[in-house]
Amino acid sequence: MAQDLFQAPDYYQLDELLSDEHKLVRDAAREWVKREVSPIIEDAAQKAEFPTQIINGLANIGAFGPYIPEEYGGAGLDQMSYGLIMQEIERGDSGVRSTASVQSSLVMYPIWKFGSEEQKQKYLPKLASGEFMGCFGLTEPNHGSNPGGMETKFKDMGDHYLLNGAKLWISNSPFADIAVVWAKNEEGRIHGLIVERGMEGFSTPETYNKWSLRASATGELIFDNVKIPKENLLPNKSGLGAPLLCLDSARYGIAWGAIGAAMDCYDTALRYSKERIQFGKPIASFQLQQKKLAEMITEITKAQFLTWRLGALRNEDRATSAQISMAKRNNVEMALNIAREARQILGAMGITGDYSIMRHMMNLESVITYEGTHDIHLLITGMDITGIAAFK
Figure (cartoon, rainbow, N blue to C red):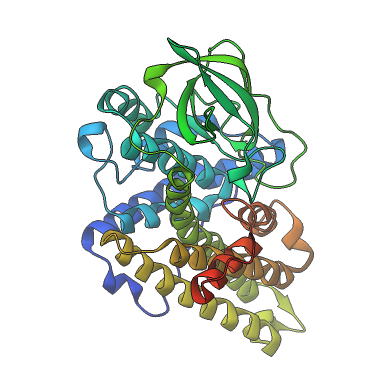
């Protein structure tokens, strides 16, 4: 079992801009990843299994709803802390970060922001502790980048709602206890509903044969005349803007998380380049390898400051959706490019499970697509600066 020798790059002393609490939270997550994730993650990815034994550890480091108030079981941390936790978890694996992101931003966040007090008390403490795991149902077989076209619908049956439809590419669905599902009412208005495992007609078939996010459980949500109690409707916000606010939170976490994956690839390549001897000297001494490494640390540093500033804006509730889109798109592309360059530095060894790089590269192919595709985020920036929507 390989020892985790990761050393985080901080070329511009970003740590000086973080509070002591931020560094404490980040370092606790970093040490947990080294101790609990790194030793088992390659095996989990090879077996295409989510390591359920880490759920308690994720809860203990505050990865489930870190910004949720303490009265509801959360850690009561700020947005910078949330981002730093996601960075460290994705340094371990994007699939593990996906589990934490979904639980935090796509399940706990909408219940906290749009739910009733009874819903908050019932679900949030159990989600924060990991006793309950959740998933988020928005994407459908026929509607990905256009969620407003969703076909999942519910009818008011007097004393309950009747839900029918299907959702696809749902992280955590195979083992989730609850699902926050977005569906249209009879007037075509989008609402959030809390669907619980065990409700008749509700099933969560798993998605197999993935080359990416292999240590993450992905599946579907199928609703066949599912009776939903009326108290399970999220009462305080409706319309497409509600799930999009959840996606803003998730994309923000991804912007941080992608830096973690990039940092891990860079650190692995840097260490390998100093140890690998060719032509009588370390390959780190050759100009082309130094070019690769220098460009990697430059791009990581740029992404660190882009995201740090975004975190500061989020703390002040001033970050726009378009700013979050820019950071998500930039940082995931940066991480994927670094993974590919790092793989080349390792040569043939880079494709093996002895190193994390190929796993990160495959994972990032999903990250660059989910929570808004690479192209859609580009068009969101285009719309923001021109005022013209190119995708409508």
